[in-house]
Image (cartoon, rainbow, N blue to C red; front, top):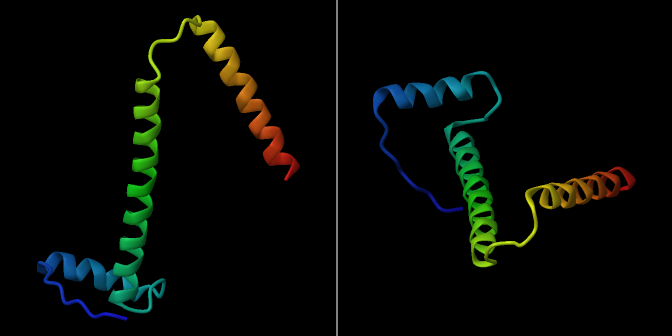
Length: 87
């Protein structure tokens, strides 16, 4: 495992120490690793969402009415819920 030294303002250092004091994290490194993992997951989710938006914009304008779009969405959502519950 690689080592990285970082500098924090006193208030941030105190915050990190408080997060480790309650026992949830073994030390400051564990806390920082958790923050990095969460940021990675967040950025991945944003990237996937952006791809969906880009794909939607690239698909053009639909000739379906808004009612048809919502009806299809409801059908797909119900099917996804049934599949999830069956699993």
